[in-house]
Image (tube, rainbow over all chains, first blue to last red; front, side, top):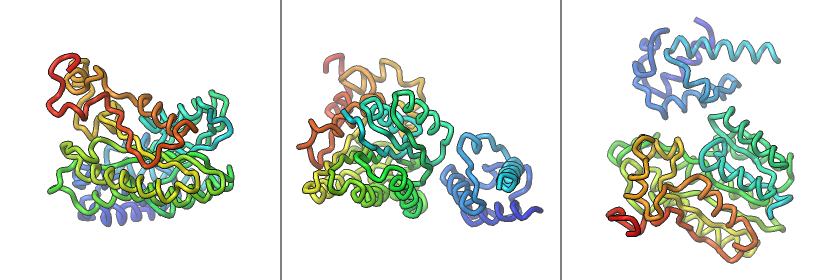
Length: 83
Length: 260
């Protein structure tokens, strides 16, 4: 598991108050019992934590936790590449 | 009319904020487009503003976060060195009844909708000092009418309206005019979400049943009034809430027939 995935899990558990075990690659946000405010707060917290930007235009495309992690890893890699 | 003025419109990537930003640009103002979640939309607004021959600057900031508000104003200060117009438009919130509200949702709504107005005004005034300015906040009929699921947002709008009056008096001697514009249902993405109404339900029949003026309020209707409040002609209007609703709030049982 990547450090980024760990950070994402920590953030979701802290904000959504779901069990860490729920966060499997195929888990949906419904499985996490996250409402739309939870999701915005997760995105905002991760933007600050990882120093990236996740616009809603992108966030609307995530179907599963796996999609979310893949997107974040690619964003962080791109940021490092640009640095 | 606003040539050479610098305006900040919070939450102006889309909807009412975008319409206000474009209207102020059309009147000649350079406009700072603040957004929180929709960068592409904000950049499109900025692009559309620039086609009107004025300057646009996009700044991302969650206005509910004091640190981000300060960062935004630091950028405005270093980029423009002044501010003539501040439009407090950004709003958020989830449709919930009072008994279903949790502290997280309450705080989120109050921070973005009400606290931000105070924090942004405190910084905006420093950039207006000595020259005067215009401050307008966007509120809604839900500040004093009960709309389903609108509890936290309605309370936050009531706070905005009260704050408008206090600020108007405190800032009057500095030649800073502070007012509010209250809208009824406006067919923006956010408006539909808060009202729990699908766009298909909003035909002419709905407009005639709810609005004596015979059509729903558009973002441009709000923008026109905001632009007026930003003009020198409105200098003596202080601390007022101007209702833009086509008469909706005056007909509690709906419109019985065309013309009343």
